[in-house]
Length: 125
Image (cartoon, rainbow, N blue to C red; front, top):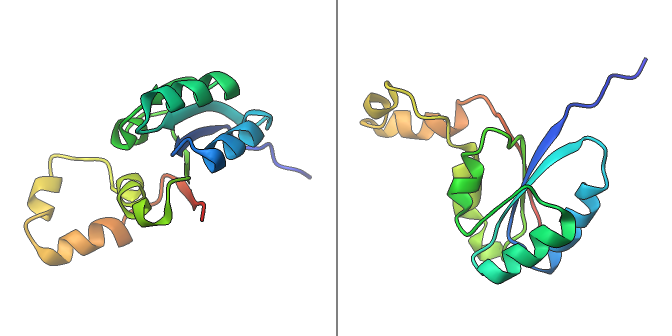
């Protein structure tokens, strides 16, 4: 018995050659219900968004990754730019207690490694 596929809200960070290609492929997949793009070059972001039918476009990957629709992330930036979007994607949602947890180094390390993943992250190299 096949399970029904979960609906995917896809965030694409980086809309260069690879981001465009991955976005075109994703846009054709029936499980992808929402696509957002973060691209520093505003004109390029708008071009790719129009080409793949994206629902949201911004120059700030943090703004994109905060969207409630996002359940999957493709990091399509240059390799040396992967870390910041990955860390933003796996950061747990802020809570009133999060300020207290940030006070200790141990809690800082566990905030990423101990949190339940909400996203699938796919760095593209």
